Length: 223
Ligand SMILES: Cc1ncc(COP(=O)(O)OP(=O)(O)O)c(N)n1
Ligand SMILES: Cc1ncsc1CCOP(=O)(O)O
Ligand SMILES: [Mg+2]
Image (tube, rainbow, N blue to C red; front, side, top):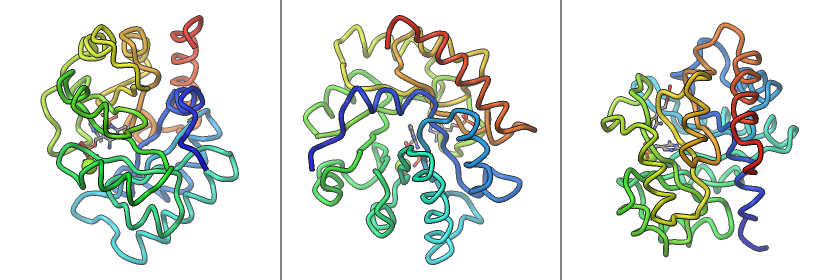
């Protein structure tokens, strides 16, 4: 099997839902299903926080989310937890600068998708030889959804990455709303990754539809 096709990954990254049980009032798997029906193109299971599920309960939820993603043919990425990604045969892993090193994760996951968080051109350049498939860039705007988030950088960081010829797929993350989506895409992102813009909505499907529409409208002609 070969590594993921970069152009199809760019499409998968258009509307990337990141979530775990801390982000949901009800069942996170039901939230995923609603959001995917609204147009979410990729999902990241990010089970973090004080009351985060662990062990078998975490794996069981991940498996339920995987069944939904598979039924809609969209990739499921696991945040941080390489063992879990391998155990359930998810489509990939997302890691940050302080997580298990990318070289080791790549060796462990073979051809699965590998996403890495970057916050600057320097970090992106350093990672270009690491067999990473996409970069998560942010926080672009202030966020309430990550306790240890760095300072928001604004969409300019995406423009800087493109200006310095970083060609890997980029997804902006952090405080992104339907109103801000066009600025993120316009600055060079292939897509947006969101937690609260979907999980905090009354109607998750409608929130996803609105975000998907904004991303489509602002990327037309580019993708
Ligand atoms: C798409 C995407 N981009 C960035 C992150 C943040 O990853 P990280 O810096 O490792 O922080 P945690 O999410 O692990 O708290 C992400 N998860 N997804
Ligand atoms: C996981 C993560 N990484 C950088 S910001 C962030 C949280 C994004 O959540 P929200 O879309 O609610 O701001
Ligand atoms: Mg991490």
